[in-house]
Amino acid sequence: MKQIVIVVGVAFASGIAYLSWQVVPGFGRDVIQPIASTMASVAGVLFGFVLASLTILASASGNKLVENTKKTKYFEKLVHRLHVSMGLLILVCLNFLAVLFVPESVMAPFMTETKLLSLVLVSGVFFFSMALFVFLAVWHEFSQFTKNM
Image 1 (cartoon, rainbow, N blue to C red):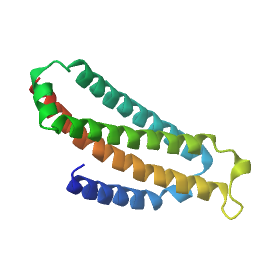
Image 2: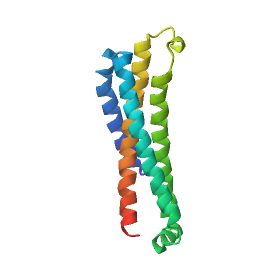
Image 3: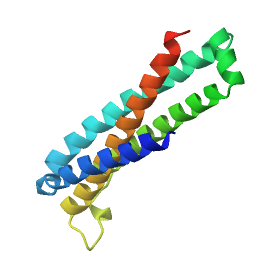
Image 4: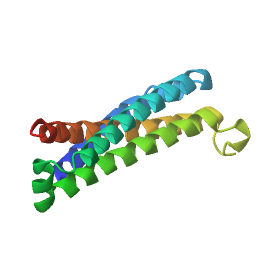
């Protein structure tokens, strides 16, 4: 990925996670779980969009634009960026699924359940923000590419 996109994305995600850390530790399990469920669902839907865009690229393999971009190696870069976006979105889903299904008996002895769930939720917010930023950058690039198909 372009280095500037990564740097700006990490800065953006860090800021969002920092702001959420100011609020989240006051939440109980009954508030944290619906938030985690919603964010996991959104990440899953975005994952589906990226998967559909890869399907479009695969089905257009005979297209002249696709053939030319394969020759210039741009096609592989675009597919790689889509895969990175998919990986981040799956990471978000797994993070929030951990919030939903971690039983109380597994909680670390040095942390309360609420602190551990808050920590996992804020890390999920960081990954979600990063994934959303990367998704938007890749989606813009993909839409510019498909405009010419």
